[in-house]
Image 1: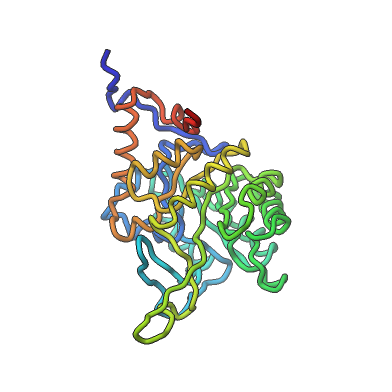
Image 2 (image 1 turned 45 degrees about the vertical axis):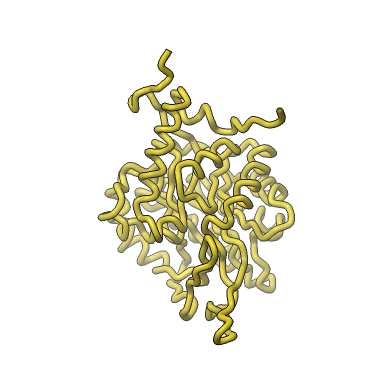
Length: 313
């Protein structure tokens, strides 16, 4: 019997809490601008969700250049969370985003719990936003600059504050720069997070041996790209195995096979990041590849392979 199914037979829909997506392929915050930048390169309407560049209350200029350095199988960035700020995002960026049929997820960042709550409250009243993603890799200026995402209690407090002011689904983006990723995920889940996305970038640096200077003006930056995929995949599997809330996989995904590995490990959806820089068509290609894989495997739904990793002999 022929197990190959037609495209019409394959159900690609997934749910992130109450948020229904037409498929599991999303963009990663900070790698896709505000989506309009890719409008002539990608069919924005075909993706499950567009996750826009992180938004803060006030505009941020970011770090001085150089802010990006290529590494073996990846890149370092020290952009410094440059963004247009809340007011300009709403007035300048949302009109275009409202024309997209894909779900719109807004990544938010702050220097204090109060700033996160303020952003969440304001964005909850903006038409066209389907969910919020909380970047907890930011430093808490009131606590000496310790990142919210490295202390479970701090991550939990941010999550609770956001959940208290919004009805939108809340996704917490976890930092890999911790000793126990499951403890971090559990802390935000118990505080009401509807889902977690992981991983954010790993902290790294690069040096120019000829000049004996750091390749980044900021000295250190976030490592992303294929080099971090094994770490991201391991963390996704650990969190998905331990918790019942949806997990969104991020980290080094550049092909359909990469994305499928994350789904098999337990991710409900995936975000494509660094690959967008060198292959703007990556998201569409990955989506097509997932669909082809499902047909080849004789599966009628992407949900059938989520968490279906086979262990043992």
